[in-house]
Length: 256
Image 1 (cartoon, rainbow, N blue to C red):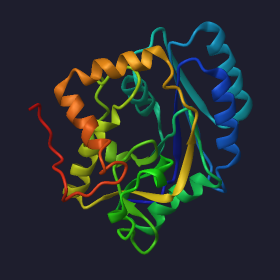
Image 2: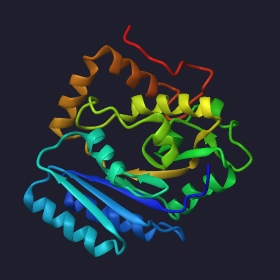
Image 3: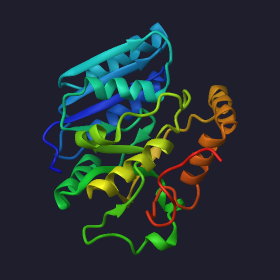
Image 4: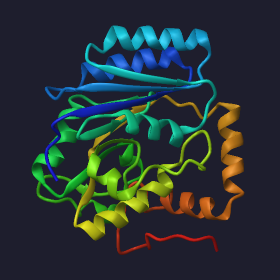
């Protein structure tokens, strides 16, 4: 794989203009010297009022090329990000979510993994990973500080990884957890191709919490009724998450 030559920032929105105002401004001001080359904005059915506010925010803060598409209804996280990736022209895709407050010089550090190790195809930043990291992984870092991990939360992804692993499944609900299925699929591809998906547990992002939304709780209840999805989510949220031991669990899952 190669160092990123063009980074496409894929941003998915659904209302919450005030939170987007905070996160986008903060994250753009803390990129480091690495720059975002284009912004791909997909709106998942925001109200007209919220959409107009988000449009003004993004045009005000981001000065580079921007492509945008707006769906009349919320068709889900997976559908939205898949649409953004399909529009992106970069060598690498950046997915952060509008509820992530990134650390200082975050994009510099994310890009550094691709420079340190040509086998890296994905680098992720987790939300408060020090609260969850299993002790056995503390000694698993390589010489440059990278630990092999499931691709979750904010991530910088080589286009070639999408070409081999495929897009996100679009039947995984409206409010996320789609990466619970995509993550193991990525690691299977990495094992087959000799690639790496990594993280640095010292790099921590903040989170604007939204789990109070009634729609979110309804989604979680519905997802838990599907035994296959429940199994995937349980594995990813066990002591292997956010860090992954490829010899501890299988990467192929079927309903029990």
